[in-house]
Amino acid sequence: DKKGKYTVLSEKLTSEPMGIGFKKGDKELEESVQKALDDMQKDGTLSKLSIKWFGTDEYKK
Image (tube, rainbow, N blue to C red; front, top):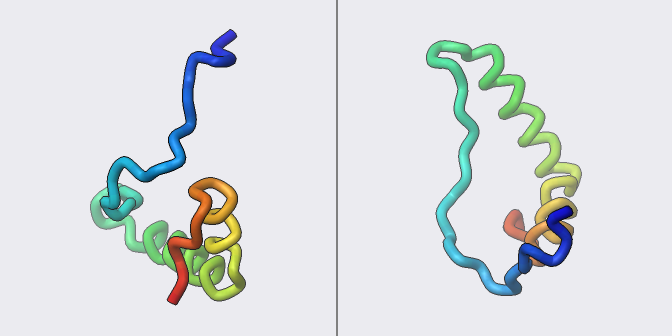
């Protein structure tokens, strides 16, 4: 049981962008993931997830 062994910090430690890796040349997968991310940004899902997990909307325009 690891309960109590970790502390969630209120401040950010870094501000680097995140990325997703793909097998070189796998354009079909890359395009599918990009479309899903674009759709999630348009319908507000990414903002909701950002607020839930990071406490702030990292997708505000």
